[in-house]
Image (tube, rainbow, N blue to C red; front, side, top):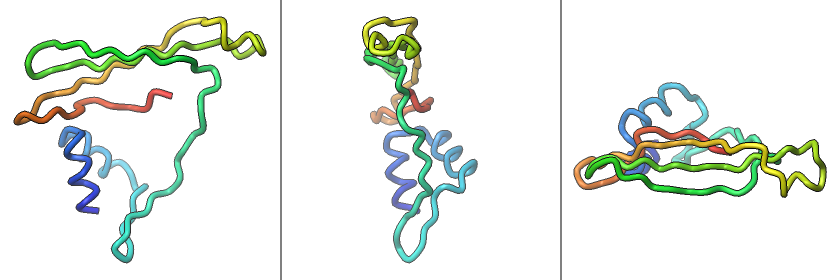
Length: 109
């Protein structure tokens, strides 16, 4: 568990790591191994292409923006060609002692 927490601390802010472990009983250490309960939710069949962009705010903050094309699945085979709207998610990356870490993060699809 300590190794997993240390790994996550390399890519996530301390706040996100603390929240992950405080609000979840999904991770269990047993016999020297780490286990988790399956929590996959499948794929969003209406989600199409993703567009990624990095926006530098200053030397210590970057916004990582992901725009996902959303299609109307009621249109059947045309669903992949007709975009109804775009869902945008933005995540802040902060520079902590020369290392970039996500300060905000959630699932996109």
